[in-house]
Image (cartoon, rainbow, N blue to C red; front, side, top):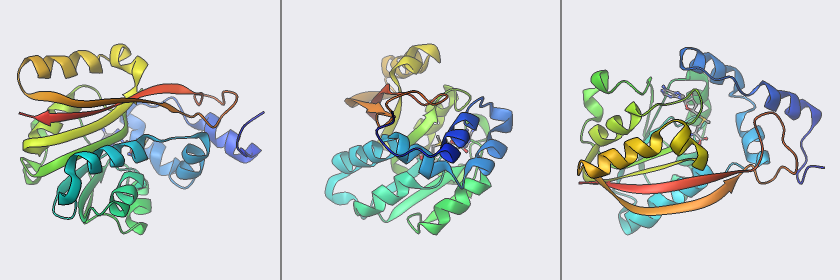
Length: 224
Ligand SMILES: C[S@@+](CC[C@H](N)C(=O)[O-])C[C@H]1O[C@@H](n2cnc3c(N)ncnc32)[C@H](O)[C@@H]1O
């Protein structure tokens, strides 16, 4: 039994949703863009809301002035939640044109760009040292971004800016995100401000493909 109504059609879509690789990531999400929010939100995907809440918590009353970079913005859930919290200057980037088109309809982003992340050496100059906060929900995952994305975060942030991101607890070790985060801390590049723990896909009573209840860590790190 599922706690929420997952139709047979959605179940079939959920079963297709896996086997990610970076070389096919844009095509994969282009294809899924029309079902993405229905699948994720029904299953209980809280990462975008948690990231937006952390961003508001740390930026506070400066929300209307803050420059925010939403990495791997997808269909724009983070941007939507940021807009609801008073953020007016949010730039979204994603590898998938299909996902970006969905994000555009939300009218939450000041700018949206098709950009393949994870290549710090060619990371566009226009984004260097520009942002007060970065949000990254759902991009630290199997077949998604590797550790290079943390270097890009530091390049994109202003001094004292905040990186806000979430990932499965198990991926901290499995994809050595935890090791890289700690290395950057030891190198004096950033410091931890806050860590939270919550569950994802908690609306499913039984697993559907790769969707089953799993623990997530959310973080705020401040660039030094
Ligand atoms: C699970 S979705 C998360 C979307 C959104 N942040 C959210 O929380 O709903 C992952 C997104 O990361 C994007 N993505 C994956 N690898 C990427 C890369 N190398 N560069 C840019 N975007 C990437 C995908 O296109 C997809 O939109």
